[in-house]
Length: 326
Image 1 (tube, rainbow, N blue to C red):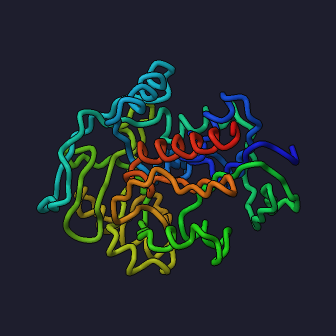
Image 2: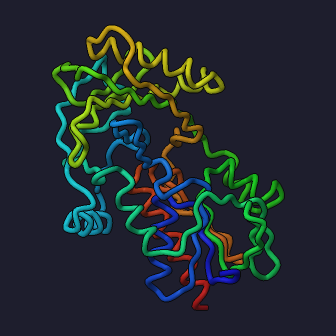
């Protein structure tokens, strides 16, 4: 598949949302993803007997189009409602919204919907895009040593990485460069003896953590004592370049205090999400360069949530569809 109608870079919610729409419209689409599988920040990892959603924890559905999609996924067993017992430590920040009507999770992991979509598409995993050129069509150089061509391109890498690929002189850089992306360190902790703190998840507004959750409380997860904790943005930014083992020790100690557990977990690993979230709400839908048939999309461009990522992909595919038909 050296020449296609559309190349989509990234197999997260935005990329696969767009690719699915274009494929269903009859276009030849290729998805290129640097990771080993679909999911992006809706990642799921298995370590020993433990199962961790160490990226996005759940999602909500507010708009009608996304609600319809969620209902279809629910009917197929790909998502289910999650109703955890939730604790709040400290005062809720003024920016915190009201509790959602429903929290949804993928089954058996947060990447379930994306894995299902990827299976229906032409995807290349564990392959990086190393160069882009536009000469009336797109030429995409990959880490596999190939140059692929496409009439249109959808780029769903984080803004800083999109700038690297497009080059400083590209017209969209002035819109991408100011996007304020923030990091998050995530802890995956597995215990031999299940802690019983009296809650399944918690918002933490004190100390280094911002969120903690018991994996087994989510539908379809194994009944092991697996917990995920996210550090807050300030702590994550301060310790962004620290060794992952050191980070795991610090966050495990903070998690232990919240769970009433002394001693180290049987398993603990830290993962750095360098571009975890946009610190400002942006409602661009996607960025569109019409003369190049180029869309840049992501959750950062449409409300900073999983629904926003999906909608951004829809906006990108809509722009591409219009341009290909003209």
